[in-house]
Image 1 (tube, rainbow, N blue to C red):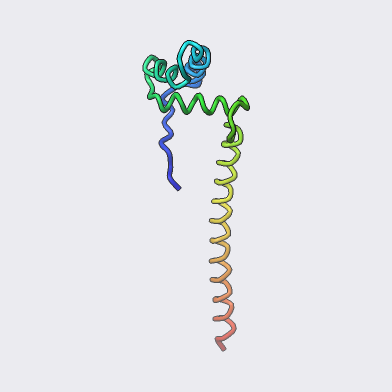
Image 2 (cartoon, rainbow, N blue to C red; image 1 turned 180 degrees about the vertical axis):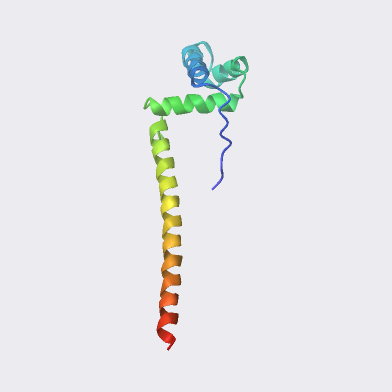
Length: 110
C-alpha cells in the first residue's frame, strides 16, 4: 500500500476559504478547472491540491460520488485496527506454537 505525503501546510481555514472562492467564482470562469487554476496561485498551493480539496468538499456535501471525509477517517481507523488485530493474532499464534512445543518436550523427557 502506497503512503501519501500528509503534510498539513495549510490550515483548515485556508482550505475552506480557497474552496469557497472556487465555488463562488466558478460562474465567472468557463469551467471549474479554470477557477481552480486561477485561485491556486493566490492561495500558494498547487492546482492539484486545490482540486482535491474542492472534490472532497463536493463529496462531503453529497454533490459528488465517493467517500466523505468522515467515511475516509472511519475506513482508516478500521484498517489500523485490522492491522493491529492481525499482529496480535500472529503473536498469539507464535506463542501458542512455542508453548505447544515446550509441552511436547516436557512430556517426552523421562
